[in-house]
View 1 (cartoon, one colour):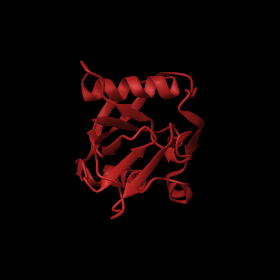
View 2 (tube, rainbow, N blue to C red):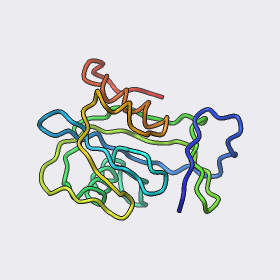
View 3 (cartoon, rainbow, N blue to C red):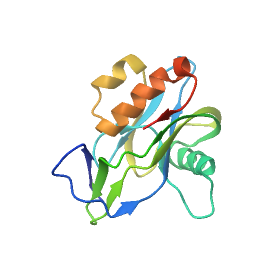
View 4 (cartoon, rainbow, N blue to C red):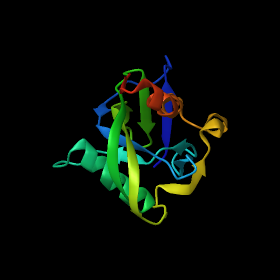
Length: 158
C-alpha cells in the first residue's frame, strides 16, 4: 500500500481516520539515532506504528520496535505528543489519517537489528545528518524535538 504525507497543504484530502500511534527514538553508544527507510513512501522514520486494541501506548511502542527492528526496549521517557489536524497521511486504500502520535525515548535491552517487511533499510544516523535525509515534514518536526529534548527536560506538545 502506498502513502502520501501532507503537511499544512490546503489541497490535502479531508481526514476520515484517527489511529493513535507510537514512535521511538533509539540511540546507539555513539549517540546515533536508528531510522528506518519505509517501503510505502521511500522516506526515513523512527520505528513505530499504530495502537492495537487491548494495549497501552508504551506497550505499542515496545511491540512496534520489536516487530520493526528486532530490538527489545525499555521506554525511558515521553519526548512529545503530536496531534496536529493539519498533518495527514493518505493511503492508497482511501484512508486519510489525521496525525496522532506519541514519541518516546527508549533504551535497547537486547536483540539484533533486523528489519521487517515495512522497511527497506535501517541505519544509525548522526543527528547532525538527519536533516539531509528524505523525511516527511511531520517526521522532521519530531526529530528536531528529539534533538532538543535533553535540554528541554519536558515533553513537547504539538
